Structures are given as C-alpha cells and as structure tokens.
Length: 303
Image (cartoon, one colour):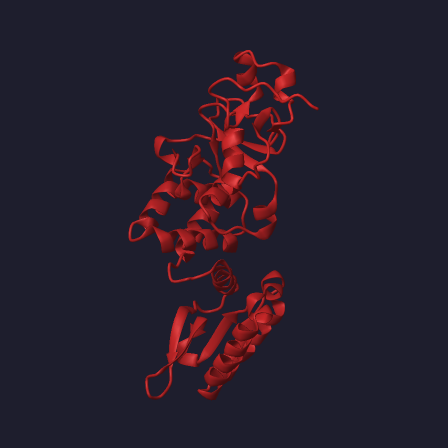
C-alpha cells in the first residue's frame, strides 16, 4: 500500500502556493511532487482532486507573481465577465501586466506586459489583483477589432449606470499607451448602452464604419392599433428596415425558431423589409452590404 504524503505545514494546506514559498518553509522537492498536489502552472501547486475554475487558476498563478503585478487584457476581461471573441475566451494564456521597471514573469502560458499602473487602475474585486473594467477596456484596444472593443464598452455601459461613460473616457484619457489611442477614441464615440448583446454591437459598428446611416438600437415596432409587434436589434424606422442578428440558438431552439418566423411574418405584413444577419455576414459582410444598399434604394427614391 502506498504511503500517504506527510501533512503540509501552515499556511499551505488546502491552498495554492508557489514552489518557491514551499522551499522557503523547508518543504522538500519530493513533497511538492506528491500525488495530493497538482500543477496548475509552472512552479505552482494546488490541492489535487479539484477542477479549478478560471478565477482559482488565476489565484494559483498569483502566488508566483510580483506584488506589483496585475492580471490584465484578456485575463482581466474574463475575470470581469466581459464579452470576448471565442478564440480569446478559450485560449489557455494568462495576461499579466507589471510596472515598467519590473521584470515580466517568465512562466509558461503567461503573456507579460509592461505598462504604468495607476492607483485607480487595479483592484481586487475579482479576489485577485486585476485591472479595473475601465482600464481593461483600454488595454483591449491592442488586441480587439474596433467592433469587438465597442462590444466590450457597450457591456460596461449597460452594467455601469450613469457614470460609466465618464469613467471610460477618463480611463482612456489617462491610458499610457499612445499606439491605439485613435481606436479608443473612436470606440468611445460609438458606444451605445441600449445594445443588448456583443453581436448587436459588432453589427452596428460594422454598418456605421461602412458608411451606412446610424441605425436605431432595439427599436420597438407596434401595429396600427398600438399593440406591440417586435423589438428589432437595429432599425431605420422611417424607412421600415429591420436588421436582426440571428445567433445559433435561433436555429437550434425549435420554439425560438417558430417565434422568429411569426415575428418576421408580422413585420413584413406591416411593410417592413427584414434583413437577417449571421456570424458569416460579420466575417464577410459584402453580401449584407449589398442587400442593405438595395433595401435603402427601394425606400429612398432616386433624385
């Protein structure tokens, strides 16, 4: 029968810890390799038998970071529950920012950044040191497209109340990086708290940046008697053109699919042109642009 590992001394039982800290407390190399411990990161140990959530993996990694470091960029966005492209959401990499005079951590799966971190740029609301949502929004300008960045900003406006826009503007003005300042300024101009999903935000920005008129967000359509018919993602109400993003749930959920058909039929019966949009259109919008131009041409007589 295999002998069980010796109990760990305080303060290590039940917690993640760095191998360096364990050695400093006299814990042997062989003990840190025992079967009751797992290795969530290089040089870090955690109790075995626990599937560590993302936040706990960050806490485990934090044991190896300098005290001045903070999780940032994509990692901070995930900790704050901000919308990200799937490819970034799923990557097994941790973004860590350290002050410019500090050496970036050399740990596998850690993407190090050097930047100035002000007192108001970092807090521990996520139970680890991470950049604030506002600073995270600014940092993401280096990693996201304009449309994706606006989707993050829209989400922050929805959850942040009346002062959210001012906080974002202040953070952008104070951000030390100059390279992506133009993208940040443009993103701030395009934000709209009424947007209810990241894809709605991306679609809106795509249309505006392509030169189309600014659409109304989540416009409510009523029938002749004033009864509610639909609320459409984007609309040109005066022209009766509705633009709707259709996620996969619209296809896989049979009840949702039936509601969508009824809703579209009722809108078209009231004279609306209905343009449905999918992720394929966001990836390659040429056909969408052509269809929208045609719809506009039908509604606006040529002079």
